[in-house]
Length: 254
Image 1 (cartoon, rainbow, N blue to C red):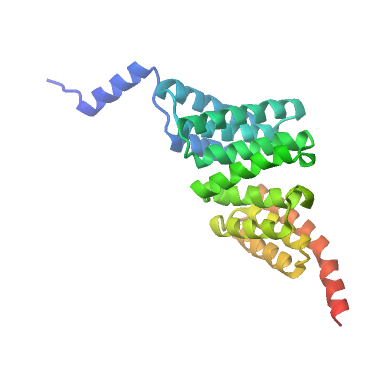
Image 2: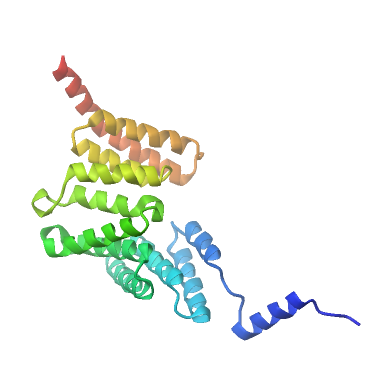
């Protein structure tokens, strides 16, 4: 007599009960990483997460991943759609925090989406808007500074760099946080690019150039991909800006 293996029966029951196979967060993360330059692929990521939420019910790991997807969709969209996606990102990040008040990703994503939305609305003129951003990033740092390759330090460092001093900006604090981001995300390009920017504003031009050189070494190991080409252009643009200042410093020293 033919016997169906127990595992197959369990799998068959799971598929029929749910209507479709469950999607793991690993599947979603792989899809998200491959979708970074395509709004269409990001919308597919959104669909995967929404379907997974229908199957699983309330889930903090799925909810913050949906917020992350909306953040990336905002970056890919025109102005009106961008606002819509950043608002959705904030809503989903709020939900993630409600589900788990220790959600580092929730606080981090809420902060960056608030920041992106605020930039579109002239954020840097209002301390009342800047303060909640700092609180979100500091909370994420306290919970898990390693999320998004040092993302909370990267975001807070960039915030300190862009905010006027009268509203709490600080180049020195920016450098400190971005150095931490590089330590936590040693292959993440924006950590180096933003640190170089902060060091430039600190008038530490040689250190800024060394930082860009370190990033260039990392990029060269990744091959000649379109993303690597984009990063190399960003590096070159910054070096062309820095070199005259290094020359001027050297001339002054002599």
